[in-house]
Image (cartoon, rainbow over all chains, first blue to last red; front, top):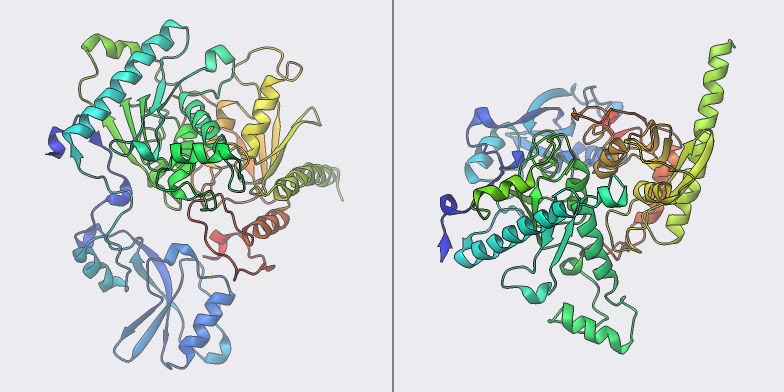
Length: 328
Length: 194
């Protein structure tokens, strides 16, 4: 049973990279240097030349290098503000600037439009695309939210900030990660300004991961751990892979939008998705002050959603009240 | 040479001297098969903490050199005798690679006085390359701090390359790097040419 998007108890944050570019005016472009190469024999020379000068940068990886229009081939050189220096012995025409798409095409329409500017790569599937939710998944997430609310109230009673993070076993994939973790903010009790709930929970998961046997371990204990952690393989010669790396494939539930430090820590840890109840407009790194997973250049994306379903009675939200200038 | 440029020159020399200490920590990281990033924290003209990356050893992607050193400074009663809002307000950081956005935010929350770094961090740089967490983001409370790169930049890049030609078996889906060769040519800052 799939739950319709509008009936979900949360709202997904649209990452800026997901912005639709279905009209020519919506396509984000950047100025790029291009040179026409009238003699086809010079193309290979120029490609080698680009390689040597280190201009094969990832910022242009979503574009093709060569454009053929009629008899004329053109080469994409760089997005530098300054004109490139070309080898003088080839007697090429002067390079000129053209607006080219900033990102790869995500849909056929956008591909067609972008290719009118410059031949663009088509990448229809996005790794961080949200999956559909069943009623069971919604209940699973609801339990996680109830849990962080309850723990927040305990933390507050214990004199801490009521900020809690929780990583449950993934829904219907418990064998991938049979444990669940919960941590609260301890900056008050430890007198350490960086003991945020997220860093604390990442540390717990890492300590647990570190207790797994190393690859070269051949003790009998390793088999027990392996069967517990990774049911599909108890062969300790298998290289540790993405499935067992930090928070890969795991969803994190938290009471407050993580600060910039914690958002980057989650990105480093390759978390799959982050759900929060209270947005932190002034300090948050998941849409408030900044939105880290939507920045250009970062090597991992994670989904972000704000929980707006029931959290167990109106009075319980008061438990989460904190100074809005705090980094959660 | 006049007096002020004399002073500036000796200051630059001092920065390079501290950065050399940070490079030694990066070397230690490399020897331990960690991403080679090292740092020193300097207060009153002396090193109060030095550290390096321990992410692989601890299986924790957040254990960067800066956070390792901060934990040591805070747990040392001599270095942090009383609780204050900004325990690093009289402390300067020298780190071989531009702090990532996580560390840049942590440093701002700790009220760091100033940061000097070696090379830019194109993927995660939090002091201007990807995001100016140090001074561009308008935090409602924490003061901004100055971060300057370019100290021992070539050495910082070379040691990273020495690490990346070997395989990082701890990263997800390790890529075979048998064909990788160590490049020795160093280009100017990427954003200057591309």
